[in-house]
Image (cartoon, rainbow, N blue to C red):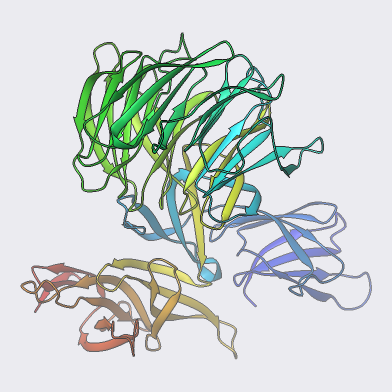
Length: 604
């Protein structure tokens, strides 16, 4: 056994903990009389330090893996160990190699590192993003909209979720036991139709928009105080609400603007635009008047673009075409660090944002980027007192501002259709996100945070390369193994390929005895053909105790088969023995450069 670290358990020196290079934790007992005896406690990270704290708690410091806080136990757990791992402290070192890849193919790079050593080696996928900690889930398919409501306008918490479906609306209300329970009816809400928009209105009112009406509901008297219906044969298609204003769009490009006056919903102005309306937004921008807006943003069909109209006149003050073939699915007026922005999202995952000057209607500093491939829905929310925008799509993203610059953070979930902020208590802020199967309620962590995913290898990764041609990730690894007779640690070397999305292991090739792996790359030898295959190149050396330096090595050429019958199988298509160690290799104009000992060789 390779002893590594020893820690005393008792002051009298009667018991010691010993950790070895294979991550085994052993308890040695030295009785006053008789021979010593040992207990195998379980597997831990390969320790660099051990410290017995007290009351069966032990800290494991590790250079090759995550440090751990463990607790010793008297009976075996489900793994058959006499210890439980209570907490891990992430450690990326030692990093042997890394690559930067676009795993989701959405233009958002991530780093994959070859981290750790011995049996604690792993791949670490590192990205900057937003984590959502799931608090509750609910199976409820077919959701096409969700909003949170407060019990009164000036309340600092939410007590209801309004969920829209095709041909129906359902409401979940917080009970006294702080559980969400579905209720059959509420204060004159139309539960028989799909809700297009709903929100709290100043004066303890609620507004609900369906395709057939705009309802104003008095929360004090729990009744409908005012209602507007579109003309015959017309239906409301999209709408938006703020504390004092409502705007709805009908078919044929008709736009109708309302104001709340007392308990009445008053139609102020209507107009007909040249094109059909796909989305609207009436979010207030003036921090001194956060209850009303001076403009409305409108997304258009037919021509892909956005128009800004002045309120209450509905005069067009800005007309902004957008490059793209998909319709504008969501628009949002918002403020970051005292700068006003117009954000527009298309049905193909493209997002545009502009600096917006409300006084003149000027749109400037246009930026365009791709956040996914599916339609984006934009929603504002507040986190730590700062304004943010959630872009729900197949690759959900949080938009925020730092030093007057818009930044984008990935969210640790996929395929979000809608989002609404939900504050069940004054001190707690959650997000409710919907997807095809239902909804999830979760708390949001820091907006700027590194998220690290671990792919355990149980051996040491030395090199990594991402080959887009085969959608695989190639890694070179070494595995420590004890000699069964002498116990001396030896090493086996491997070349392995994994799926670049699921990180499932596809195939592997074991090197020869005493052969070490040094370098890995990918080469496309036929540069003239776009569909020409690419090959993994592995450089090795043979290491023997009696040789001061390696006298021979190999260059191995592997191909990843893409045919269905042998999909993702490694095939060794060529090997070449060389005189020396192949320390590095790189593609060069369809050929291969290799650094062998102190010389560079050119292969074609």
